[in-house]
Image (cartoon, rainbow, N blue to C red; front, top):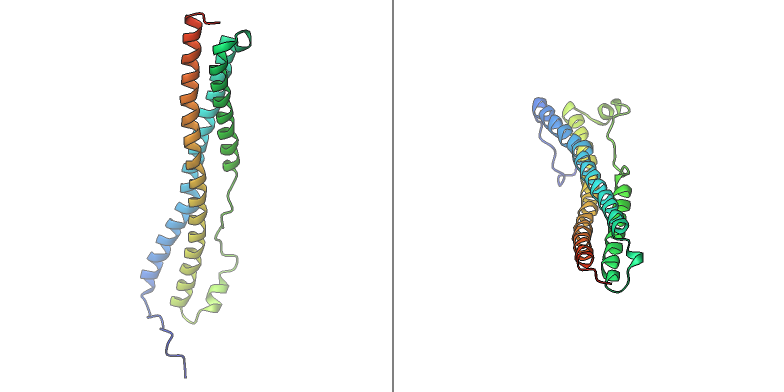
Length: 180
């Protein structure tokens, strides 16, 4: 006698299962390609901003020539160096996050595997849906992890911008009033 505690799946119209498969494949495509493309565009933006900040800060150093000054010029110089370090740090982390994460690619090597495991077309479609869903969940977890890493880059970039602005303003006022 069969185990009665296991519920048997009810037969479902295969057209319903085919619609579920279409939805699962669309969902899978979102996790494997669409979300990652948005993440890559955001990382490219961080790369551009951080490289721009490095260029501006080096320009500020060149324009004000901090090595010729002493005293109060040391303060904006230290601010500028900290901004430069933060910008370079964000640049390096953005480059590291651009590499391809460990995502699973779902493909069917041999469709006969599904047909051989199933006693009916419904079981075959259910097994297929289960595999797509399992792979999508793993990829979603990878996207969440990558997204958290990307979000952590925004704060240092904003702080770097603010420090750079203060450094430039400080240099400007020191240069305007000829403090030595």
